[in-house]
Length: 153
Image (cartoon, rainbow, N blue to C red; front, top):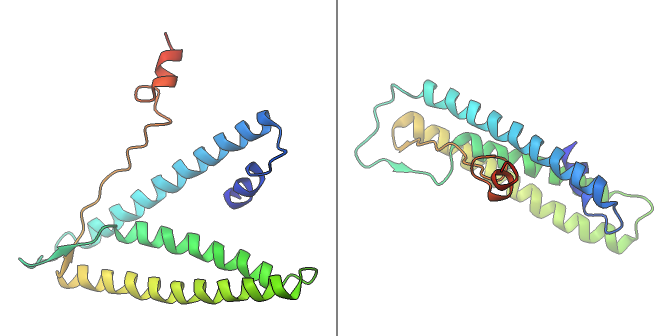
């Protein structure tokens, strides 16, 4: 659903009130997604809490759940690019360009899947360790967003 909201909100002729409503729906959807990613990371943290981390273990820039989140976004890109690559009423040139992009996305998916699998294997073996940071979204927080807290005065 959010993918389609993102498409609609980019319509240059969208009514500003409708755009604001969509932006708020997108923000709410992103918060639900962030909460889910953090929940999945808590699962991984619990699952690997007894792993003996090696002294030379390294940390990744993102946790397994955030990597899986990126993979899920990539799956959406693949789905929608395939729609464009096979859209009957599109020109042959358009379909060919989209097919090239789709091929890159599919290659990226394979690399990302391999990387996520390797990350989990490395965590299980103690070669990498997890450190999870809660996302600190400030824009929805009435105590942190200056526009929101100034409106409360």
